[in-house]
Image (tube, rainbow, N blue to C red; front, side, top):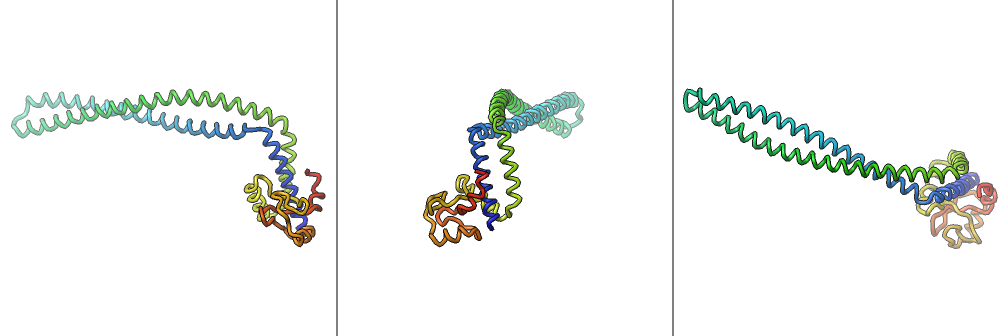
Length: 243
């Protein structure tokens, strides 16, 4: 258990160091993430609009083709009217002409609607392309700034990340999961030392009996008030190389 406590405390020190390096980057990572999400949303919208425009123009052209065919049929029907032999044939031909005429009117309305839909999509596409171009410029600028900041801390960050990997393979999955859960809930601090008989995280007093047991390093203890994992002075001293 002593080793587990030591590894957890050393992991905490490493994570705090990485947090400090991350803070040096300021709001840049968050800003870049937000811009990336916006960029993705705009690109997805652009693709959707392009498909809408293509589909609308295709349907418009198909309707136009159908209208041409129907008008040709109407001309044929008109010629056939002069060759009908009885009222029944005349009535049947008239119905065909009426149906063709109604279909032409419907298709012309559909063409107008599809033309408007495609034109609106094309206008929005042009605006989106401008927005994406502007966003690309912002991302390039932000990424360059982040790269400049990261360059100054890259070596140190890699060293701490390497130390972190070495530590997490020595900690059980259950303990590591508990550590990550507490760390997330307590703003980065999951493992804290005892300071003057109190929790180093929330400063709540630790009962004397628990202090005695804690110094034996035989069991993992959590602060009764904040839930952080407590470690003894001995663990802190052994792990001083990470401070």
